Figure (cartoon, helix red, strand yellow):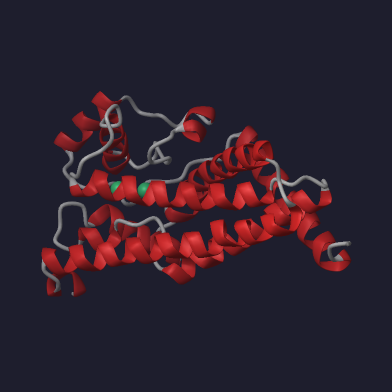
Length: 248
Ligand SMILES: [Zn+2]
Ligand SMILES: [Zn+2]
């Protein structure tokens, strides 16, 4: 088993390198194209601020849906990697499985698919928000990976943010809720801040094992509507974008 082969020190070094490479990939695939695009379309300061806010909210929604419906499918490749994140808690190998993206290539694909949709929507609507949105994706990804790392490694968190450690560990205790890491907006919108923290801690005392078979549960009608709308926008936007091409 690979997990037995690595010491904690080796895993820490590997995990830090993966986190750094993911951050560089996030900058190269989000903020950098955003900056280059801004040289062409010259967004205002207001468009930058609104774009970054939309990009971060978009990433928060993506984190929620991706974690809830893909990472918690044990038979998918996404699920197998995430299962290691859950099952390696407290093990020497833990740091290697403490990033949101399992590799820079994987992150690049996530950025490309979300980035194409953001570009298509902004181009169709004639708005200059795409540079900010791309930068917002990068900022969110770097933040989520850094905070996730600090939660798991017991490292310092900014003042007022110690609650996120308890929040995320409650997801490890009972994995059917709390899918956002540090900004539980979509957990709140879809009623997934559950069960109560005290219940999760009681649960871990009673059953000191990760709930790896937790079901992602049924989609609520609001979630289903949002997912379908999202997919429809992606399909229409990407088709229109690729068929028409940008004008002027
Ligand atoms: Zn975790
Ligand atoms: Zn999880």
